[in-house]
Length: 61
Length: 173
Image 1 (spheres, rainbow over the protein chains, first blue to last red):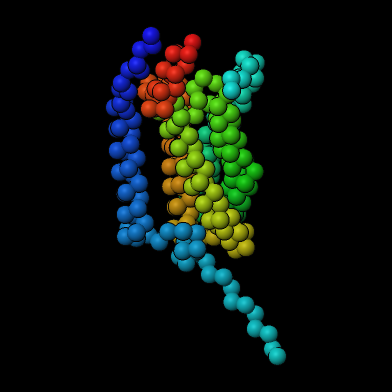
Image 2: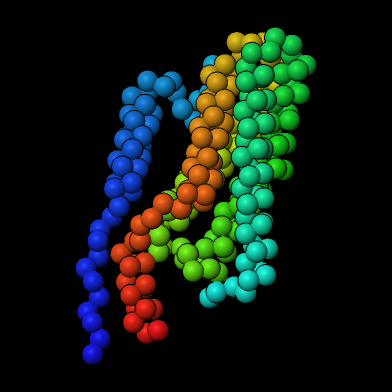
């Protein structure tokens, strides 16, 4: 007669600690991006602070 | 499906090589990013950002991608499995996040390299973008240390799925 499988012991403590740390970092990153504390984000926005593209040459009709 | 021992060793060698290689490549990228941030010589700055762009496209992205693929092969072809142990799941998650952030940074890297090639950059030009490259490189390096440490320490802990599979296998044995 087969024995029923033992109860699952649950998630280890180190996984819970890392999960909490990861969630905290994710929320922090989200707050930084949404509030603009870390400055504007994304490749396009970075370019504003630096060189501007030269204006296109005008073509006479 | 369990891989034969010889193939397992080849797959493990490939995984370790590409993973450690990606760590070294990102460390070089960080060193270049710091030089590019502080060096007053425009020619050096141009060379640095051109090198960073090439290194990203030709070395870092392929290494990180192959490291992820060989890791998947390694876990699916051995008793470790992909979702049986928490450390394997965590390693997979960190690797996917690193690859995603890296791919999202490629436009910025190419753009800074392009601008520095077109005109000499002073220390203050594109400052925010250049700081961002250095910060992301440092973060990437730290993040890549996590899978390396997990692979060595292999902390204990079965997922619910892993627990069920283990008892199914021991019952059928």
